[in-house]
Length: 389
Image 1 (spheres, rainbow, N blue to C red):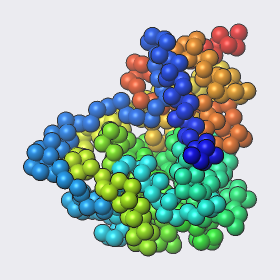
Image 2: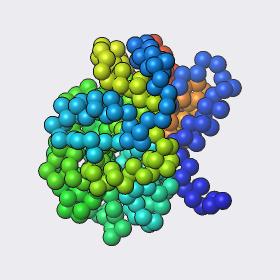
Image 3: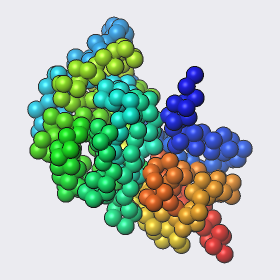
Image 4: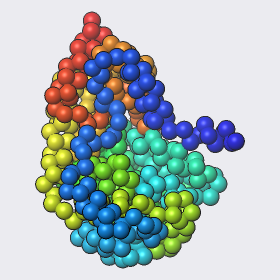
C-alpha cells in the first residue's frame, strides 16, 4: 500500500467534519452548520417519475456517455443558458460532480503536473489532483479583496509544471461569484499560458446577486474548458449521484475511457430522476434557492453585528466564510471549543487554503431551517461575548 499517496489524498475537510460529528455524538441539541448538503428532500414528482421509469424497464446499464434523453435535455438547457454551441460529443454524464472532477484530473494530468486554483477553495480538490499524480497549487486571495484572485498572484504561482487552472464560481466555501473582470482576467491568463481550465459550476443555479457566468463563454475558452456541474445542490439530489461534464471533444473522447473503466455508467434510474428534475416544474427548486438567500443574508447580518467578526454576504451558494478574531490562533481549536461549549458545529478554515488566506476563518453551511439558524447565531454570539469577557 502506498501510504504516502494515501496521506496526501485524505480530504482534510472530510476528516475534520467526521471527527467533529463523532465528538458531537456525546451532546444533545447539536446544531450542525458543517455539511454542504441541502436539508430539503428531493421533490416528490422527481422520485415518482424515477420509480415509474424503473417499473417501465429503465433498470439496465446506461450508455457510458449517459442516458440519451437526459443528454438531449441537458444540451438544450446548457445551450440556452450559456449560448455556447454544445453538441453530443461535448457531454458526458458522471456519477456526481466529484466523479467528474476525478475523471478530468486523471484524463489531463501526468505525474508531477500542477493545477492552479484560487483559494479559498473546496478542500477535496487536493485529493482529486493527488489521485491523478498531480499537485494542487492554491493561489492566495485576500478577504479585503472579496477573495477575488489577481493576475499578479496567478503569474507568481505559474511553473513549467502547470497544466491546468481550476476555478469554482459560485465558490465553496466563500460564496463569492466571480465578476466579469475576474473571469476575463482568468481566461486571458489561461490562453496566454495554454492551460486547460476546469470550471466547477455546481452552484451556478444558487445565485442571489447578478448572474454566475461561465468562463467557457470567454474568447478562446470554449476549446479549452471543461465545465463540471451536478444535480446534487440546486435540485436537492445529493444521494442520487448524477452530474455531468461539458468540454471539447478532444478531452471528452479521452475522459470517457476513465468513466467507462471506473463506473461503467451512472445508474439508469438515477439519470431518469435527473431528467424529471430538469424537465419538471421549477417552483420547488426556486423555493430552495430563495430559502438559501434568506438564510445566508440573516446569518451574514448577525455575524457582522458580533464582536470581532467580519463576513462577506455571499452572492451565491449556501455557505458563509467569516473571519473571526477569536479563531485567529487556531481555527480547529476554536471550532472544537464552540462545539463543547455551545453545541454548534462549524468547519475550521484551514483545509480550504493557505494560511494567509484562511487564517481566522471558519465555514458555515446554512443548511438548517431559519429557526435553527437563529438559535445557532444566538449561541455563537453568546460564546464570543463570554470569550471576550
